[in-house]
Image 1 (cartoon, rainbow, N blue to C red):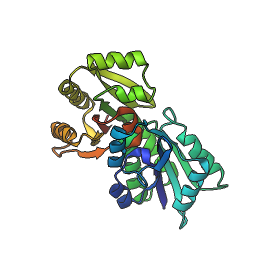
Image 2: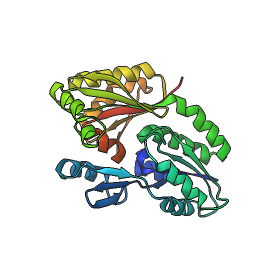
Image 3: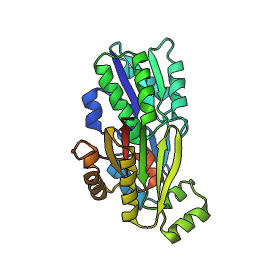
Image 4: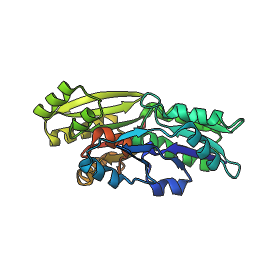
Length: 277
């Protein structure tokens, strides 16, 4: 049977991963001189608590090729072939380290797949792959499945502040200052390896309303989850407003991890989805 491997930037809840037998390789989160394996030595709640009180803005980094080799070796114990779905190469060098790790394992039965996505958008692909693998899908069949799902999968997030993008060097100082003065709240999307801005609003409720409108424009869905960064109450309200798009069921609410959290900062709310069309 093929076993599914991903990295912690997929933001899949631990119990979901365990239930489906998904092996998760932790990314590295660093505050100053302290480094932690995401989800192992640093929980999501600890991440956001540290972001508020630490004088150091966190950074994220991929595991080394050797760490990937060790992770793949462990995941393949028992004779498993591996199908590894990782953070999009447009956003990180993580997948290059993963591929180097495979090269260090001659004749290893590992397929490394570039999701072109991040957070639970990638996570939704991973979950679908795990379900298919349990039903006996081969690595070639899983590649075909991912290729069919990826063009219909995206993550959209309404940020509450530009401050953390500024801290991480993702905005010029001028843009960040302007954003702070005008209270601009951008809505961003990651889709097919591209990060783009979909909207700008000045007020929180307007940004959430625009988020719901964007979700409605992408319906109907095969899969839909709501994401947030230390904003569960707001995410719950958004999930209620998206219930009619999810066959009448309130979408699952998931707290995003280090990759989204480091750059978006606390207070972001969004959704990840697989559209039917």
